[in-house]
Image 1 (spheres, helix red, strand yellow):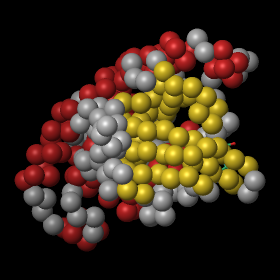
Image 2 (tube, protein in one colour; image 1 turned 135 degrees about the vertical axis):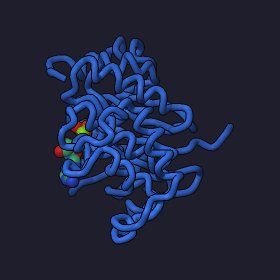
Image 3 (cartoon, protein in one colour; image 1 turned 120 degrees about the vertical axis):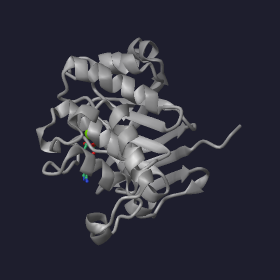
Image 4 (cartoon, rainbow, N blue to C red; image 1 turned 90 degrees about the horizontal axis):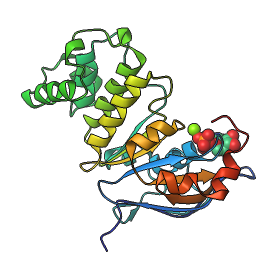
Length: 247
Ligand code: ADP
Ligand code: MG
């Protein structure tokens, strides 16, 4: 068997006596697309925090390509190829769409050279390719602040892709998007899988269905079940958890 790109074993996170995650084991193979669902407070965001090094597990192991990443800084884990998009897209509203992408795609992160140095042809080409890829080429010169919520999400996703991460973590990428934007986002995410390992956390079941990926259900910090969307929706444990709650 090939080594999973990411593997969590018996991970627990204890916030002063409250367990946000309990004995969570989960593994992802290279190029896989995985959906994570679960009611509010299930531990979905904490799961991402553990992978990105924002939260250190109280117990258990987290391995990237077979090596432990526990204790590494968020910057280090990011440089090892783990990219994350937060629920609110982090784009610079007062810079153009192109400039946002140039900054993300630029190999140097040193502020002075980012501002004043000419970008290499590789960066320009990559930015052009990404703008076409996410359908933002017509908005290349627009200020990022003038984009719709959906377009901002795509810009944020393309800024993430510009950093060529092996693993892309997306926390609620379609919250607040129109149906059409949601459909386009599903297509975009599906096209990223294969080259990247992609983890998507979402509440929107139609969107999860569109993704057509294996689903992991979290509840109260534990892995409740895994399977296709139809399998997990038919699981009595899942039905019980979702009964009487709006999301
Ligand atoms: P989800 O993303 O599934 O809604 P979270 O991972 O954000 O869930 O949170 C899981 C639980 O852990 C929640 O009950 C939340 O209040 C709690 N929690 C998250 N972060 C902290 C923290 N830093 N300190 C204490 N409790 C936290
Ligand atoms: Mg969350």
